[in-house]
Length: 335
Image (cartoon, rainbow, N blue to C red):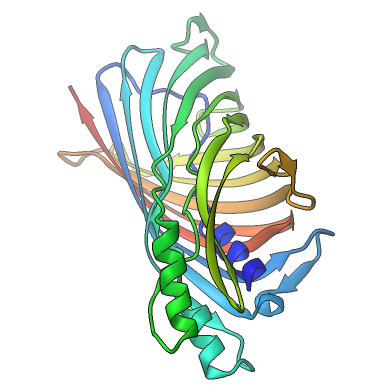
């Protein structure tokens, strides 16, 4: 049971892919992103990198619906500030139990919820190299982002344990299987590099490093005999991500253009430490491919850009093999 619930939490942590290019907004321009997303999970990657059905943990499949947001603003022609909540608010989820479970056990699985708030990223991005960068260049762009994660993943462990235990004694209570996010502070940096082949095509290289600060957290532990709570210091270490993303755009008119991209991202984390003890086999890896198509309507009173993306897991270790569908709606305002 406990393993199954951990896998469910990982399923809810899939974030929509942004274009991590070295572009920045012009001075005085604001972009607001609204991104509804759906994550679907029926398999997991085990410690050997092999795909396994979730049925090994009494779970057949799960779905998570989320709303994600981002607000970015051009301070100068070279510097943007941003608040990105992606993943953001996981507002609904469903979990299906394996078909061979007794009704009472299936009810416990299906009452598990993967809802809640994720952590918020705030930071700034500076274009060092580029047509409008501090160092002018027409063939390449390079930008650096610095920022922090603010913990927002509030979790009532005692309420979750009480509701879980109520299910074991004939009740029918939904319970949160854990936090939506890590709920710890983090600091980090992003590097963005674009090589511009033409006005319509460039290739982006991206890397991100985050360092998570240790924090005391109260959590609920679940088993077939009951749930209990405990508090301990959690150390998540760091998270490293690398991405390559060819970007293509084609104007249809002066006010309408189409775009497409194919982002390939690799993410890794080390073993987790709890109360100073390293938990073996908790290090993770995930490789995803995300095709995306979009359209930009510049001639409207408020310019709108839409992007549809579908993320596919290719390889992983100790991660859920989650497919994610997201629609990105960007609106632009000039001040």
